[in-house]
Image (tube, rainbow over all chains, first blue to last red; front, side, top):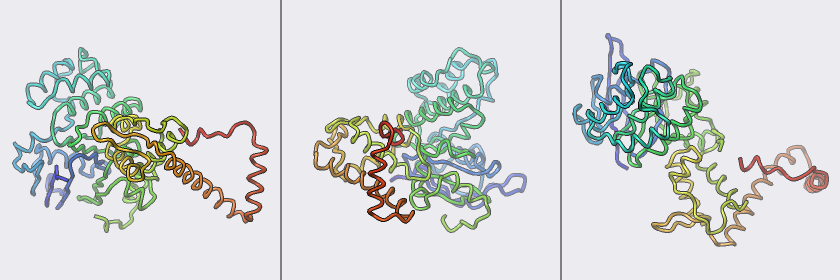
Length: 238
Length: 130
């Protein structure tokens, strides 16, 4: 299996405080991977480092490209819509994406928008939190890249929207692409994950298969995840 | 479908398909939905569905036809064997639990017979299929 993402010896400091230290991580192509960790553990930071919007020390390669500008083309990150004026209509944002990203597939976006019941004529200011997240997901997945980074797509949205978003991820994920989804509450996405990565103590505490945890430990993913925060010394499984 | 997050998902997918096959929802020779469709329907990962199907193909309960898709086997002997395996594994659980209550084999058989005679209405097999 080919590696879509390779991170070697990655360290990131912010205001002289170490957020991530000597991180190493490899992801195969074609997977759905859960990135778990407490708030502030560095999940978003790790994603921003992968896209190149944050700069750290170390090596990050996406689909064989290490250079930031080239790497960016292979990653689609679930950017929130804060950068757009709230008077903007959804369809104007879509236009913007089409212009900025050559890999943006409009027909894919339209199929997802229909499935997620997105009304393109609405202004951003008029969107509920759940609807905003649906727009973000559709925009992110409409790009044709090798690696998708979804940053907490389910925080604070109702369960119906959540289910729809999960279905759209399963339906429109390209076979060869890998999706990294960060969350601090894993139960709702556990059945769709191939693997989980837990970020803790400035590094990757574990990276393993979801069914491996169920198979070998007879544990729910949520319980397994929580065991890392219960103070146990589980670091032997890296 | 609701999954028990303590049990490997691929295993639960297999159980789900076995029941569909044995209850006639999936007839012998019937084509299974495409892998991605199954994944979306069950809200699970495509790779996990593929793993479940690969194991079933190896077992011979499902037959893969190149370029056409996956089909339930038409081998009646294989299906009968599958049914027997599932019945035995259900019974094994009941047996273990009754044995743990210090019932002898004779008592277990007798209590099962009493249960069948006195049960009200139909056996509720819904819990298995949900």
